[in-house]
Image (tube, rainbow, N blue to C red):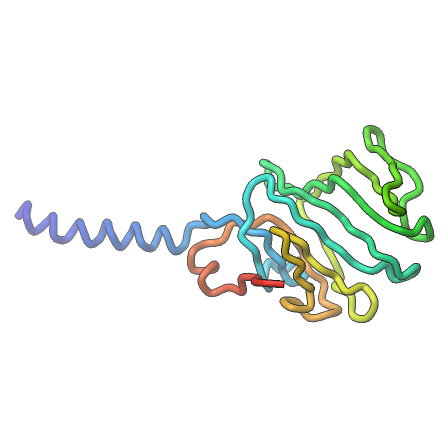
Length: 173
């Protein structure tokens, strides 16, 4: 009887372990979700303190803008720097307390930023913006994984193994 119980309990235990692995969110990602629905359009594996940038062309003055972010230990997105070339409409003209405004190589930098967000909502440019993600020294156009004109929510999200394997991991540049 004890032997029979072992043969029954072991497979049940292993099945439970396997199902837990498939359905418990374990894999940290930077996810790109459709609007605020939670539907994952694409993702990238991410680590704590992982840095990434969003680069785009400003729609009014048609110059590059680079927003620099880092994933915090609390799983928020912290903007720590902003770089732009034109001091025109739509660009900051002052800094917050503790931030530093500098000009380097013909570009304006706002450094030491500590602006934290649970997510970033972004409307992917259709014509001018040409949004690009920079991560791990790779430049990846948003249009490679999201249709232009789509509103995406960028955020930290742990995925289950099933979501990870069935999802659209962003690759290459």
